[in-house]
Length: 194
Image 1 (tube, one colour):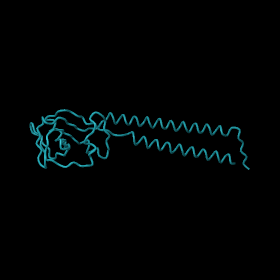
Image 2 (cartoon, rainbow, N blue to C red; image 1 turned 90 degrees about the vertical axis):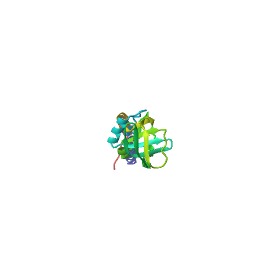
Image 3 (spheres, rainbow, N blue to C red; image 1 turned 180 degrees about the vertical axis):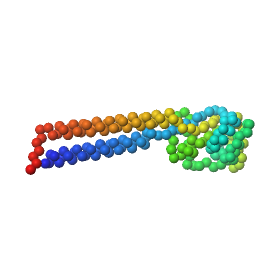
Image 4 (cartoon, rainbow, N blue to C red; image 1 turned 45 degrees about the vertical axis):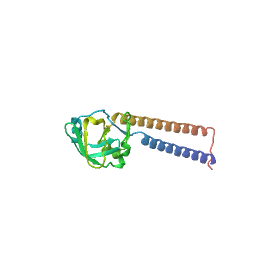
C-alpha cells in the first residue's frame, strides 16, 4: 500500500508542476507577446495642406522646441504659418514624447486613443511665456504623425502563438515522459490489497 500511495503522490505532484508550468508559460506569453505597437511616420518637412488636413482630423499637436515640448491648442494654418495657443502637456504621456523613429514603439492600449492622435512638430525656435505660437512652416525640421504599426503588432502576435505552441508542446512532452516513467514504475510490482 505504501508503494501505491507513494506513486499516486508523485503523479499528482508532477501534475501540479505541469499545471503551474503551463500557467507561468501562458502569463509570460501574454505579457511579452501580443503587444501593440505604434510608429512615428517621421518626415523632414511639411506643408500647409498637410497641416490643414491634420487640423481637420482634430489631431493633438505637440511642439518640440529647445526649451522643451508643449501642447498647441486651437491650431490653425495659413499659407506659410502654423499658429495656436501654447498649452500644458499631460504628464501621463511623457514616455511617448521621444520614441525611436526607426523602430516599433510599444503602445499601451489604454492610452492608444490619445497616442495615435498625436502630431509632433520640431523646430529650433523658442516661444517664451504663455501665449500665441506663430511658426513659419519652413522652420519645422521634423514632423511625426503617430500611427498604428500593423506589421510589428502582427509579428508580436505571431511570436506569441509560436511561443504558446512550443510551450504546450513542451508540457505535453513532459506529461508523456512522466506517464511513461509511471508505467515503468509498475513493471514487476505486485500490490497486495488486504
